[in-house]
Length: 134
Image (cartoon, rainbow, N blue to C red):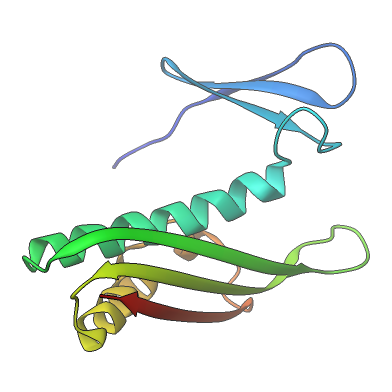
C-alpha cells in the first residue's frame, strides 16, 4: 500500500505554515496574504492532477499536443466549514488534437485516474469543458 507522509510547521505568526514532503516544500496561508490557502492548494491539486492525466493520456496516444492550460473556478459554502460545493474546470488544448480524444482523456482522468478528485467528497457539483486550439 502506497503511503503519504508530510510535515506542516507554523511559522509563529499569522496563519502561515511551511509544509514539507521529503525535500519538497510548500507554504500555506490561512489569510491568503503570503501564499495560497489550504483550500486553494486543494483546488490547485485537482486542476494539476487532471491536467497531468490529460497530457499523459494524449501523449501516450501520440497526438500532436503543443500545450495545455487549465482554469478552475470553485464555489464555496458561505458558512463554516466553507467547503467547496461546485467546481468548473476548463482546459485549453493547443495542437491538432481531435476533440473526441480530449473528451475521452478528461473522462478517464475524472472517472478513473485523478486521485485528488477521488479523495474529495463526491457530492461536489463538477463541470469540465475544453477548447482545442489547432
